[in-house]
Amino acid sequence: LADSPDFSHVAQILYTGTKFAGATLVSEHREANARLIAAAPALLEALDHIKKYADIQSAKGTDEALLWAQVANLANYAIAKAEGQEG
Image 1 (spheres, rainbow, N blue to C red):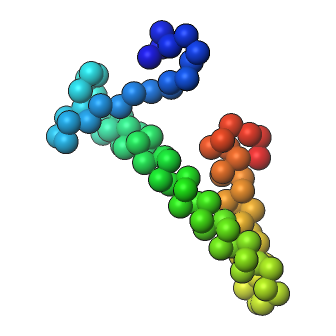
Image 2 (image 1 turned 45 degrees about the horizontal axis):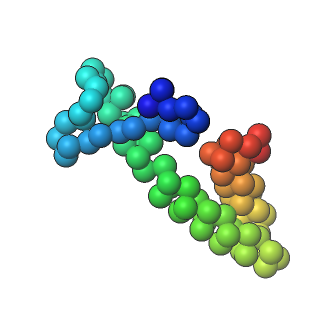
Image 3 (image 1 turned 180 degrees about the vertical axis):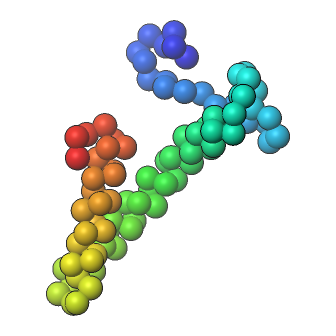
C-alpha cells in the first residue's frame, strides 16, 4: 500500500479471526492498534452522535449544561483531529 500512487491507503489490516495475515505481529500492542484502526470509523460515528446530543443538552440552560458543553468541545476537538484538522 505504500506504493499507492495517490497515497489513499494508510494501512490495510487483514484479520483471519485468530491471527493477523500479511505481517508478523510480535506484540499485543500491535494487535490492539490494529483493532483500534479497524474500529475507528464506528468510533468516529459514535462520537459524532455523542457530540450532537451534547450540543442539544448544553443549549438547555440546565445545571448540567456546562458539563455537556465541555463534552461537546472535547468531541469537536477529537473529531477534528480524526479528520486531519487542527481542532
